[in-house]
Image (cartoon, rainbow, N blue to C red):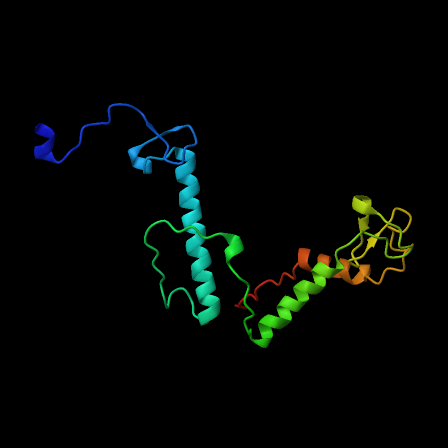
Length: 171
């Protein structure tokens, strides 16, 4: 009778099992779910919100500050259910995406730049940005195009800046 006046409900008589039937006990604070199921549900909702907003931004060409999408209640979005649509991008964005495609296409077995021998993870990367085997790792063995002299001059100039004293006022 006292609980009816204050609007509080008495605690449940026994432990509540998780509504996802995972075998653990749930709590009313976590919508009758165990902590793991609750975290997974919250994570899915956040991912769904991000997916919906990013798809909306791509289709509409607007930023998230212009239009806010409100999702009420739990949303289950499966990654397989989202279809890829071709979207016309400005020329600056298409050129950068083609550069990324070229870099990904270049990935393959690591080979020596001189003898084309497979080097795997034991290859040596030179300053000329090429990969070489143990026999060709030195700059004189693979006709290196990197200018070591200029690089050393720049490093010395950067490490030792020019110091000029202020001129003194003559009396």
